[in-house]
Structures are given as structure tokens and as C-alpha cells.
Image (cartoon, rainbow, N blue to C red):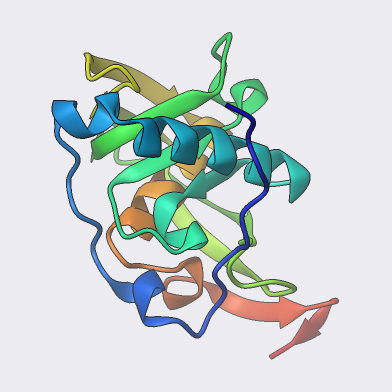
Length: 164
């Protein structure tokens, strides 16, 4: 099964503002979902992304991929039906961008430390702590799964250094 680059769904598009459907363990065994995970991973790397969520490729389901170099794991992190909770009251503000909102950046405040629960690509339950930039990526991607774009939370939106 060869993977292919998918086209990125960009704002404005209603799918980016809709909560994705949960996946069942049976769904994860399907060739369709396995191929989607491979295609999303390839698309993320070809687009220089650090993570990608299924709605960003036009599929409204609770699935996202985070690049291994940012996930601090040996392979790309696949999160199915993920949820998170804050593990610290500390928040940090940093500049974010998004493949679905090309050329736009803004300052977003996010929790520094979170606990994540999800299923992996095989349907096994996983739980882990994420800190700092890794925690920011997870929160950004899970926002996508819940129909929220970073531009809805960001301050000082800008493109090419100019305020919008």
C-alpha cells in the first residue's frame, strides 16, 4: 500500500468547524483508515507540518498524527479519539500557524503540561504526559478534532510580519 499526499482543507470550510466522529476499534482495522493514517503522515511531512488532523484532509473523524521528532517517540504518534486534561495551571503564549490557515500566524496561550488519553492505531489505550511544545501541538491538533481553529483563540494575528 503506497501512501499519497492528500490535499489540505483550508479555511473557510465547514468541515474545519465540525466535531469529528469517534472511531471504533473495528474502524481501526479497516484498510481505509490504515491508508488514511499513512496518507496523512506523508501529507504532514510534505507540507512541513508538525502535526495533522483528519479534518485538515477533509475527513471528519477523531484522528490526528504528530511528527515523531516533536512527540518524543520512536515513531509518529497516532492519536485516535484523544482527550486531554491540564496537569498544571501554568500556561505559555507562543506563535502558532496552521496548514489549514496558510500564511497566517498568531499568539496562542496554551497549557504547558497536559495528560493525554487516546487509542493508538491498533486500538490499544494509551496515556502520557506532554510538556511545552509537545503539549502545544497536541492541544492544537485536538482542537482541530473538535472543530476549533487556532485563529479563534489567537491574538495579534499577522501574515508576513504585518498585523491583520
